[in-house]
Amino acid sequence: MKDAFLVLANGRVFKGKSFGHDGEVLGEIVFTTAMTGAVETLTDPSYFGQIVTMTFPLVGGAGVNEEDFESGKSWAKGVVIKHPCKNPSNFRSQGDIEAMLKKHKVTGICDFDVRALSKIIRDEGVMGAKIMFSEPTKVDVEDARQFVIKGATEAVSMQDALRVECQNKNLKKVALIDFGTKRAVEKALIERGCFVKKFPFNATAEEILEFAPDGILLSPGPGEPNDKTNESVVKMIKKLVKSNVPIFGICMGHLLLALANGLKTRKLKSGHRSTNQPIKELSTGKVFITSQNHGYEVIASNCSMVNVNDNSCEGIDYGKSFSVQFHPEAHGGPKDTMFLFDRFVERMGK
Image: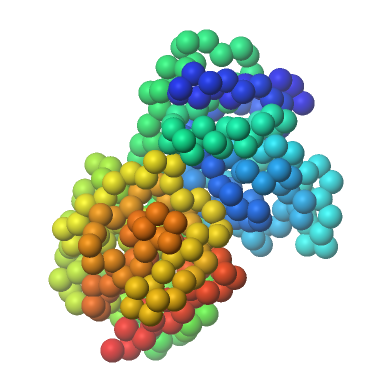
């Protein structure tokens, strides 16, 4: 491994070793405190444009298995790991994490104080960053400062086919609008007897309603909800809301549904990225442990769920439609909030 440098938009530089793909990258640096699920993280389209810092010190001990991929490729631009495991040990393992990064052309940097980096992101917020192989200059710092994720929804929508599909068209029909969906979302619907048809982010409301869906799912995805690309998406969702078809929004789908209902969103300082975020359902007082990966929140006073740590909005119930900011398909607790898919199917029945 050769020397590598991580330069942040605030001018801080970390020196480590390179691994994975041999190429310089610019991205938005974020951190996740998840102790497991590195493969799922790297293949989650919600990490498009980002350099992902994994705070757990040893990553990749169970190896890599493509059955665990959330999409057909890795979307992260880079990855920061204290110690990438070179000798994984698991009966399902098909290879190590470095081989995966090389295959999917993801640049990695390791062997420095990753938790010190995470504290900077936590205290100062997410920011641009650059992984490079020569001593950084002021130009590189400026590159990091100027970096902005653009065109995220367009880049990730409809890039991955359904892994499994239910062909029984007599079952509940779900229109899944793809803003960067995960295979686990599709699988959760199909396991509940739904016939799923995916639509790209730029599909029209008329095209979606022509399918005569019993329900509409707005998928997770990356980027900023108020991005210019999403202006037409919000207009489309407004028409879907008027159709009276039940809608279930997850993560980005939650944010876009809120915008379509006249609410506003704002950026969180460092975001929520972990598998242990506690959320409280206000109607029951129950607390659930959830998996989360987002950098924005809805500004609302009518939340149905809130984050126990910072009281940010984690869910809104509109009556026939509802949405959540976290990932019920990710088995955070380990399957605490999968009941939300059952709730969606139940509302389709009504």
